Length: 587
Image (tube, rainbow, N blue to C red):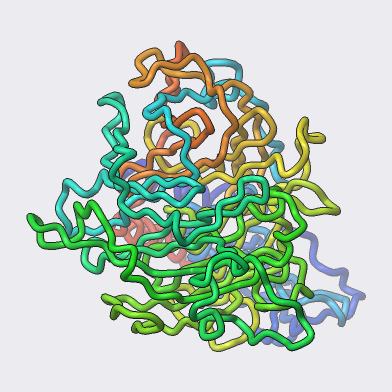
């Protein structure tokens, strides 16, 4: 405690002893209103009392009074005690606070800057660490837990009221439209067991599977209250020329009616809802093992017109479904022109959202308690290779994709500034802002695009040096991008060239032998990261299991308890006030 008080006292003393910016010359006309934005002193006054904090002496012109000076000192103490997240030196912050006290000779001078306007030179990004350093820059250590090839991995959503045994449950699925419910073993505790003969849901009779065109089962998502509602959402492609069921209910669920001038749409992207069978032991869906394929309702259709002439590179990731915590919306990725049911005018990719409701849906075609009207959430992206939601900050979506003009990119999509998170937007405009955080900094890909595989913001504990970094795959290497400095929107990617297998891997392996399909997050309770490849399922494990020095966890940021904070503020303010009174008595 004494150290904290002494630190604040010393900082105030150093700030007060610093040389202030020179005031305007006596012959210059001085103004205050433009600099203070209507402050307490509209025109400069000659000081009869010195300003202790900002360093103005008696007889100098000032736009601040002694009370203003005291308030600025208290604000400075608040910033010090609270731990300012700015990269600027404390002296720079002090000069910014005191700038309102110095008159300006320019009538068009801008208003006094605030901390939000403060821009300081960013420190250079840290160089890549040597092998075994704080960032395992040359190694991603993995354990192989399954040998099968799966296109997707969907963990159970968090539910504190469900059976604790369900917290390691997940769904794995393949492009050819089969879904399995599995229990994910703890790290180092065995392999992922999948019974091919007993899928949770088999949609091979509904789905049109064409690997060359990237068609098949496109996405799987669980309702946020799945253990209570049993609601399972899937998106898939169907062929209206060969399957009568493909167009059943298509007009009702379409985003727009088909114009007469447009030819029939052959391939449709269908979003449908299925219901799990309640577990007879637990009485809920926490350990459900099957779903009824005939108990289905169609929610949304979009035309995959480009699939009639395009390869899988352009279509393989349209249809991804996402939920995020605290949100009743389901998010759907659409390729260019798919939002308009029979038109392809808009070539940019979009994310739309559907209000699926919070409770248990009624059964039957076209029924339910959620409005299926689609609203554009974000638009203007290139061909996306996948998206993920940051588990630590769910108002952030990270999407990777390929722009035809600018190459591989990573997008940060956020609706935090718009205030629409966890609520419906009343505007028809996209609710989220899209910014490019990583451009084509990797060099040209060794294979035809898209060679970038979307990933996730790592929040797990296996490799502390990667925590908070966005992990993705480009070419034959993994990459970890860190926001440098924090809250700057500037991400610096670091290459991780080696993907190695753990010595104790449940399924023996020496390296990732297949093509990487995706990086996904596992259980919400462990935040493990999984890598899906054509030769198996891998989990990120501590680097020490791959003959590398396990990095020490980064030290936690300094925290000041609320009681200590207010005590420091009170003592600092009292000290400033006492010094001002003493100075006045001496004068």
